[in-house]
Image (tube, rainbow, N blue to C red):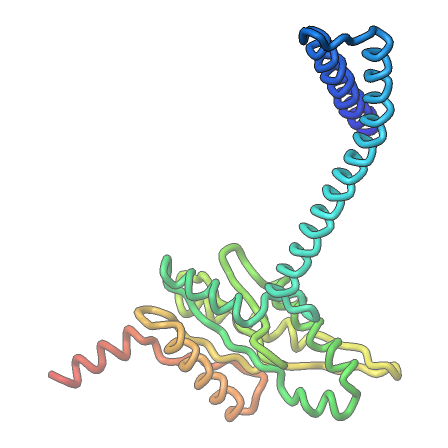
Length: 253
């Protein structure tokens, strides 16, 4: 890199000297404008003395600008990563998850899961927010370890998480939700005094067939509330929207 820079300095200096010498020689050809050889040599020396430091300064400035561009690019990447990723759990943020899910629903049907940590306020109140943070991190890791190709996940906010599954059937989606629920129930998060916290999840599941994202989210939320009413630590699936539509048509007849 340094040799490359020195070549640029040498080239710039040589160009300045050559241009100065050429200009003085051309001036010597003008009638009545005598140009002694000593003056031409002196001009070349002056050009060399001036252009070399100037080229060195410009080279340093160019290197500094390049370094600043690299720093700016790295800072932009960090900012973009921060905007897209939840800093605590490593999952995507709510807005990014919703955007990715909306895009995925255009290409295929799937199943949306909304999961909520049971009695999370009691964990924070009883063991402190530091332990609560550990619980969220552990659950985030459990969610990522249970993902399959094509699945999406994100932290919706607080102690609530979202997943969009690319499953072949409601039974397969429900099995995936139950697998996640059991994985979380098997966790034992350490406290700061040597104890253990065993978190659990309540999950609401809804198919996306023929629905908008807002409708799927509402149905999954309603299923989640039903899971809470049933005692928590369980999965509840919303009625299949295709079957509901069929029943409406039958009833209308």
